Image 1 (cartoon, rainbow, N blue to C red):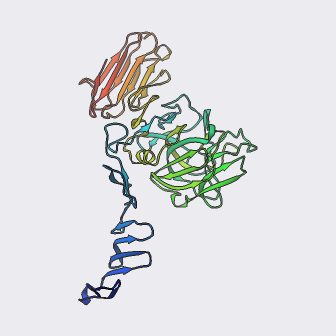
Image 2 (image 1 turned 180 degrees about the vertical axis):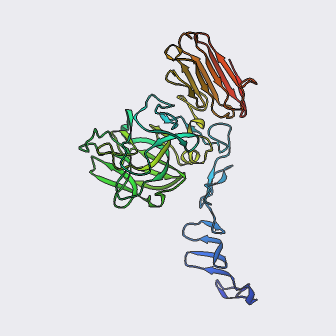
Image 3 (image 1 turned 90 degrees about the vertical axis):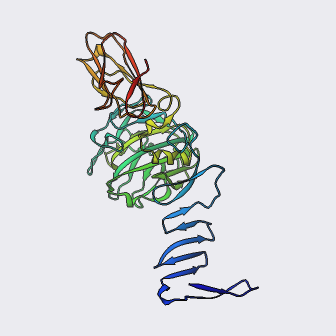
Length: 412
């Protein structure tokens, strides 16, 4: 293909195909873009209005220039964004630090792994969750009661972030109650939903009792009904607006926030309806706003959120104390596991998680041993100082471990 250009004039003459056999390749001068097409597909497309450049209808480059030393990162669907290079701390190799949440449930039990809370009503299944066996199970159909937090989560000032994974959004024309203020069996004066899907449009948004209405983000959730893979969702509220994210990308903003509290997860307690999805996993709450980059970091991580966060209260570089255990327990990274042998009916086994580089765990007998033994198990073939297990049988004995990514080593 060739073109002719008249010297001195700001215009192109006719574009001439030199060989009819090449007629499947075209240059398209559109009102808003210029593209090189082959067999009807855009190979290179440059948009005039947005400034975006797209290659092979797959990779879309950001319109902005980015900052010095930033690199391009894909979301797995061809959308490229600028991100910082690793600076040696937090999250994974992107260098983005995710703060430790105020409250975190890994899905393996009704007790929180970060923060002091638990579910008073929740079905914990042992099926495959997002990262490990176990998630909050609401069933694939029928009315289901919500998972109720033992202590309500305050949303003071309407500043908060929630992050979680869900499996197989329910079909139907009912509301989808993801987070709701305590209803105590009645909707009167408690219709505060920081995350909900509307019954008529299936759009994601916020419902407030003070406003008396639903505030839409404009994002339609219908395409996620019945999905057979885990989907990440997050909401970031700044006191005025709520930004919603699906699989790490911002999908819409609702012009409202909730400033009261939440106590119900996954359904509506009034009559056990408004069930949102079959399963919820890796649930976390922050009393602060996370950035776009931090939400993307959570979504793109290959490890559960607990293992990539930093700061006091769990993850990164500090240990979080568990409630005393009186039975066998599978620990998470960055836990200080207390074992109450005085209250146990027999010996207790603490199983370590899969080894993750630089992660730490401590286990301590928090009572008299009473002639019982705590066995620390190195998770299948992974070892502790070269052996598969370590035992403790002395009053108030403890062990502190660090991982090199393939095995565990005793610090003290």
